[in-house]
Length: 221
Length: 221
Image 1: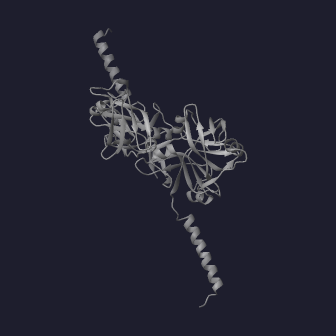
Image 2: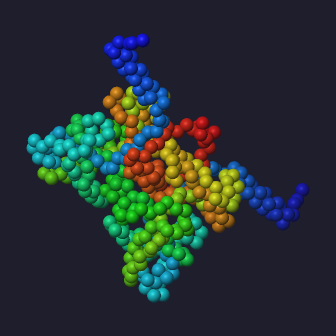
């Protein structure tokens, strides 16, 4: 029997698509890759001009895993009442409001206590002075210690059986194995699966970028 | 009825002792106080003389919670291939072998990777240079990142139903609530109940000295 080439191609194509869908949604791993966030800052257009000069725009240096996000070539200096941290990376793209994210350890170096907040929730957060190549700005609020969270694509959320805004337990392995409770799940169609922690959490658990964690299946007894 | 004073005193004494025992062993809290260990060093007599001069002995500045242990007035400078940390506290009493304990974050500052070890297990651990007021010494081994552990008196071990050398899960509360797995229990008749963590673990969990934790009663499902 000779099958027409066009029909054969179509059958092969549809079988491949079906297989791909099965692989990505049902048999894929329960591993979640880790992304460790070092101290960084997101800047408003106004602050970019104050810090780096009128008309300045950020220079894209390296794409981050989340779509559209990038590490800029620009860095700033953070100045607190007790210390200074140089070389703090600016992350793009430009945001409506400036937000600086540091660890608690950085807070001790600077002499400030960054409140633990979900990204975006900066009302009455901490103050910090930011210095660029052309100027400086003192934020009355905008300095936070970001709460750990998982970025998930809509398909990932279905795969893990969780929804946007839910808090889950995340389990790490190794000598310093830990269950991190109270981990925020953020779901968006353009998110890529990634568990974001800060450097304190990375050092305390022994995790580094590219390691994997799982959602903990434990219960209190 | 008149009871002889001596007999009455004896009865009161025995009842009070029985009550005290009940309180300390059965109805007492399941809370374990936290002690955060900042970077520090234990020195051998030989190294004390090299660093601070012939015949020098440590000056007791502040007693620690564990019996006999104290913070000395002396501090040293740690020098690694990438950085220097000043003002590192010497803890007494003098030890048979020098052991320096730092966090992973300190390791990044110094440019060394301290292996995660139980205190005392320093064979083939990391190298570091220590500088005092009168001299310096480069340890070929002795620099570690100490594993978290709970000091327990023999009565505490009975109270918590655990034994020396056992590994337990420790649970913290608060926004950054965490279950720290793989926590070593150390039992000795002269130990005082205390959960020792380093500054990375403290910052990642939001714990500070004097906070309390509990042994986690969870199981994987």
